[in-house]
Amino acid sequence: MRLHSMPPVSQDGQLGPFEHGTSIPPGLTAPASAPKKKQNIQDASKEQLMTEVEALEQRLTAQSDELRQTTLQLASAEQRERDRLARILHDDLQQLLLAAKWNLRSVKKQLRTNRPLCEELSHAIQMVDRSIEISRSLSRDLSPPALDSGLLPAIEQLVEHFQDAYGFSVRFSVDGTLPEISNALRDLLFQSIRELLFNAAKHSGQNHAELRLRERQGVIEIVVSDEGVGFDLRELGHTIAKGSGLLGISTRIRRMSGQLNIETAPGAGATFRLLVPWGSPTKETS
Image (cartoon, rainbow, N blue to C red):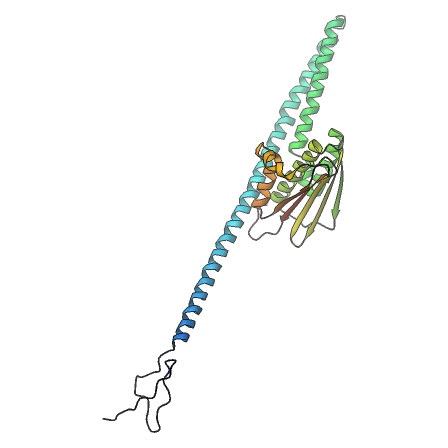
């Protein structure tokens, strides 16, 4: 039996060289050092952590995409309901009001000799005319005819409507070219713009505002600004709690991974800036 002389062991636990003429016994290997073991454990932990982080990011992305799709679907459903109500106003209510108007006119002709009654009938006809105007206005507000032609034609029609119906002037401009977007996103953006313009017309104390649109790096930027009375941002939470339309806008835009930024101060006007990603990481509702 051949004896093997063992090499010296260094302080770090590694085997030193064997003496001349000796050989490493079969099956005997130098043990891994403690620092190397520690490094291997750290590397494995880092790899596992990176895998878990990647999986978490994928889940978050999937949830974000799902929330985006749900928001767009809700916007589409809301617009479809608006379209339905607009058809009811146009096809049913307005026709009934027109029929009532013609009947009143017919009765008035038959009672020409009864002056007091004719005056009452004239007053009734005026109220019917006013009801028809309101019905038509509501129908246009709910379902702008130009919306099917795209976002920009719908906004241009909205600007004209604000001028004609409320005497509120909107200076509208587009910086560059806007991308083609889905009908669902178009509906959501249009609803948000309309709400911001209503907010300016109602609260700014002015008879004009500015609306600007542009696209930059995959994000559509919408800015509505006025030179009105402004407000204290610290009071915004109370305003939203009372049912302000800003809450609906903020909620929808946030679900789209977008932002609603507000710049204002008492007496300094207000600027509302919407930043909405328009890209489609998954299939977007058409």
